Image (cartoon, rainbow over all chains, first blue to last red; front, side, top):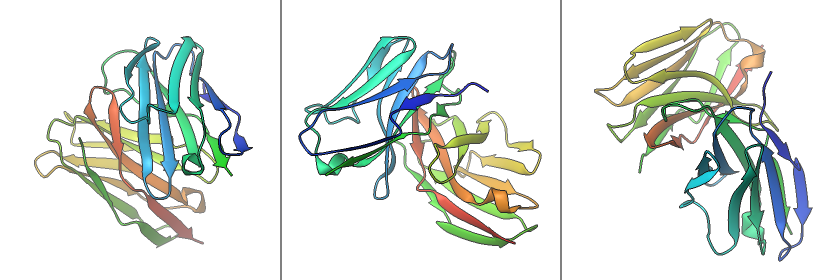
Length: 115
Length: 111
């Protein structure tokens, strides 16, 4: 059963530290999404890629967040410097090529706590 | 952007009964409506989806209906079982690949 793989599953660090979250999309999927989930805001889209090119990162705080796809099997989301308000669960999702009305499949997330 | 509202926020049903969750959306251009189930400590799992050229879709005990005119869609779970207990999210695709999600419904199936 193909799955999106995210690492680490949990991360606790102090404010000001750099945080890097990684995602391996489902093999063959060419769209990759980063979401953040909090109790207050629910699921929010931060950024997404198609064929490794960033299409939209308007949901991301630009001054501290950055998202990249070094290759087709790896997507990264970095926060530098991290702040307590960044504490949330970060999900990666991937989708197949084709029209935009295709399903997105989620990983199990990185639970991030910034102290 | 797209605004998706989901009701109810919590739902408790007796095992074997049906559960219905309703969502409304604001952008008439939205054309794809997935439903996700999220269990504790896991990511959202796609359980069923519907495109705007279809009014209803069924997969075993799960069905989704779409009313484009009224801009609302619903999830129906029949013969509920304890393993159906989870948080359910509706979503609507409104621009390019963007999905807007509802706030979620916590479903509890009582044995």
